[in-house]
Image (cartoon, rainbow, N blue to C red; front, top):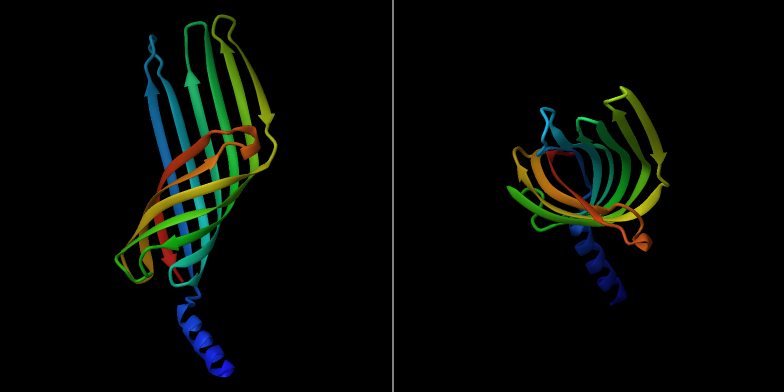
Length: 194
């Protein structure tokens, strides 16, 4: 009896195991112009790239390792002084992904949740005095920290091994103990199933 139960569980669970991989690349770019009184334009600009590798241990569940490199810049000019703030970061993430369709479906919605580690966080403040024609800058390196991350999206299959994907991801700007704000990014990219 125990042998029959063991074989039934083993055979049924082996059918659920998928053991396939997904390699992905996504990007995000945004530029917003802010109103100014002068002839030079004020703006916020951000750019990030993410590379990911997922191991599907079941047909609709995976563990994903990803790395994001990003930069955000704010420039505010005036007749007396210009201000530029640049934020550079590197983020390593480990997420669990759950899909709502099997991998061969034409549309595969998904959700993800996990933890990320800010391996690099630095902010550069630059002030230019336009009257004296001098520039001062200061770079502050912030402490590396672990943060929670969540996301959702949709994969649109193009071929058996390739899909376009769009989604939204969010993570905190600092550890939860310091009452942080949630950062978010809309992403678009491609995935290859190996």
